[in-house]
Image 1 (cartoon, one colour):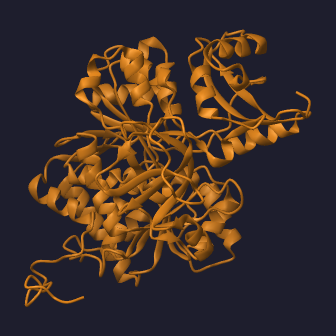
Image 2: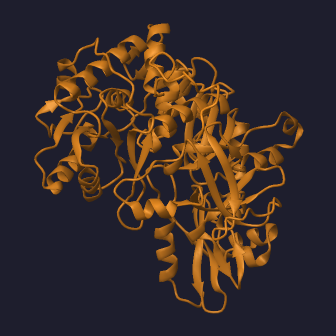
Image 3: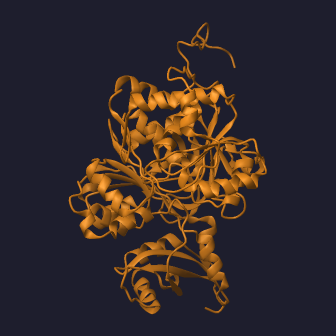
Length: 546
């Protein structure tokens, strides 16, 4: 490439080019708003100056102990202040943060610790038993285990020789952290759910984390000083990058150890919460909560929902309570929500149900993304924008992972023709908005016809006596597969299988309606997604005639 007049003598210097990092957000906010509340957790209230001080001290201590670029620091914790601080302190040291799913068993945690070559493990007392088993199962004695001392939690045991606070005390508050050598350096490592075999380690880079964190503010119209309630696990895609977003917006992180309806509603009122994120199961929990908990709730709290597609009826009921719902979509590989259902003012005049249907769509790419399409998975030819033709959802941009750790074959499979293949099936509407229809493995093929399990679930959620629903394929002797619905009823409901099937047949083509209905609780992951692989196993266990 030949230099132009704009390249000659105009090079990168320390004055005009610094690798971008989301860690700089905290440095700025601590300087501009040192006394503004950064973290709330029970009786703990820390300012941005105090939080920045703690992060620098912990980073300094890690460096003094010899940890740095390329080393993995894992944390196994709920949404408590130490988990929030780790999102800044670990990268400040140059190390890579690995936040571990709190719902995993010891065997899965041990696999992650070995696969990630973890050097330091920070442990929440609530998870100490599983962590102790996992460390033992690694067969290693070189992992530095640090216990979090949480006076607000009763129980747990010390499993390390040092505490988080002990190491914190070793550090210097004036530690001069530096930006990464490259924006392409790894900032964090997140593992997929691993429902079929070992989980894959998804590597995030600084550039993606920085841009996605800023995109959250703009796309969700968060403004300055949002009060964010941590209902979304911080271990899940680094909390969709919101630890860094909150720092950039000079907001307040309201920590929450357990996602239960009582403390959620209480904190919303007492802390004047403005924003929170959560899977559709969290929204359903709030919708069905006792009425006395909802009294006095302020209107206008913004909720960003993702994970399993939320049924339109749940969005409608949330908005009836005064919440402002925005729908996002993404994967671990896309730093969380890379697609967002951007709202149009002209939609305000639509009916309540029409607005809910529009919001149930996944939407358009966010500011950090560069491309979004629905295409044929083999040819990558885009499907017609007709809202009906299904294809695979593909994405590209700075908020796509570096790749899978130590797994070049899986990385190569994920990247095709300059695009990231999501494995999700969707349609493109005439206005350019994507709508998710299924995971590729969840599409039900009955008599040669494709049935979207999401479409059937949307109808089921509209039934007044149904609280939760999931639909999978059940093998059938004649049709190959038929829809099998797993349903959780509201307390005291007595709906029968025949009544559920008849209800569905009123609102969709008869071949799409469930042929089987099974009642009971649904198995879920820690992020609220229904574990459909378990339901598919149950459906396959039924006789083939059905």
